Amino acid sequence: MEDYGLLVAVATVSAAATAQGVRNLLQDNGIRATVGPAHAERRGGQGRLRILVFPEDAGRAYELLCTNTF
Image 1 (cartoon, rainbow, N blue to C red):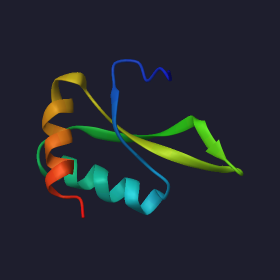
Image 2 (image 1 turned 30 degrees about the horizontal axis):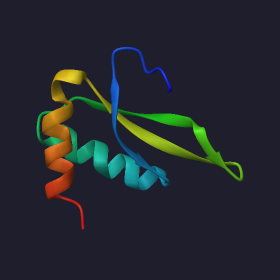
Image 3 (image 1 turned 45 degrees about the horizontal axis):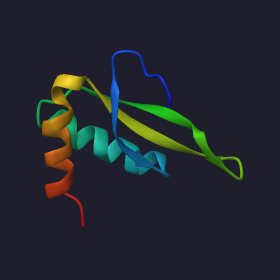
Image 4 (image 1 turned 135 degrees about the horizontal axis):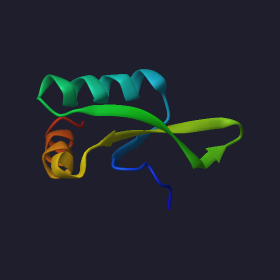
């Protein structure tokens, strides 16, 4: 398990543009979010990215992502 300090991962994506879109969605809805690397999931030199939030925002972030995923 990767350690992100006080933050928890709510999503893992493979493209930087997608990560920024998810981060922006969360921030537009009042959830503090940032993007960090998912080192353990590196495949073929292409690193995946995790969207990180504070634990108290994780449930709301997850619900928001579920309602905005297609």
